[in-house]
Image 1: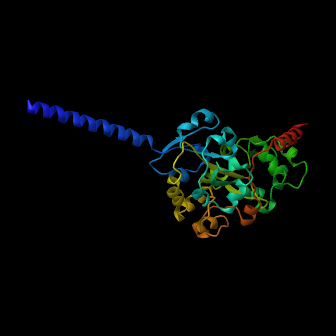
Image 2: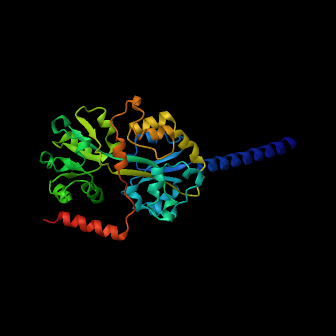
Image 3: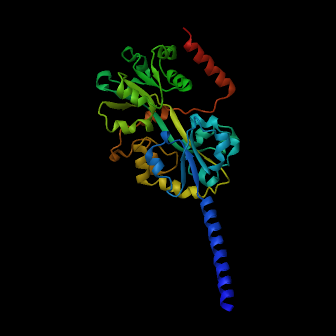
Length: 331
């Protein structure tokens, strides 16, 4: 009888421990950091530098209904072109320890946003647009040509351009011709951001304009391709980190410190992404100080100084751009 009672009691104790272990395990799993991003706009080196124990999910912002489905992610990585897909009010404010990492360019850029928006946005990467040219020994396009080469008769109908009126307008404004935008549109070019390199390689197209992260791997393997960064500057694509679910932001410090290590910075700039943080080595990557890294051609200091970012549009500015675009489309 005593043995039976002991056995029953022992069984119940073991059962309680099992339940406790199960609950603890589930709790541990629920705490696993989840991060969502669109991998097509992030270099593989950056994705590989995400902590291995984070739960990663590729999001297609073109189809993904973020307003309803982002709540199960602690962190979202998103570029400036897709910010309109989310309501920043739904995200957490960025903590001061994280803001202390940002460099002058990042802080200056954030200054263009409304205060409540500024508190939600955390720059995590800057990507310059590049001009990728096929067989440039024939066309002789250089950084000194600035953007005027887009009006060359030799390039009519042979360019793959970004599918963004705002971006095209901003480039046309840097050409020494008041009718530059209309002239470009009348050339019957291809407008495709995602498949630009495929068009360039597989057709008689001569050049493509796209974010550096989307073309760098092809530059390493296709000797026909070369790269140009006009001295008048290039558009910049910003990647932001948004924080959700009252996530403990101190957990990001170690990750950012890892990004700022010499080898990490080197990998990222090789793949076309620049970190927007204060760090001697990182800042040196902007002015090509570290030539020993054998990097592919990168923007010059002059190009960086003249490069531009896209601020949030006010309604009046949006209307003005629509008017400019409609006029350029008119026969």
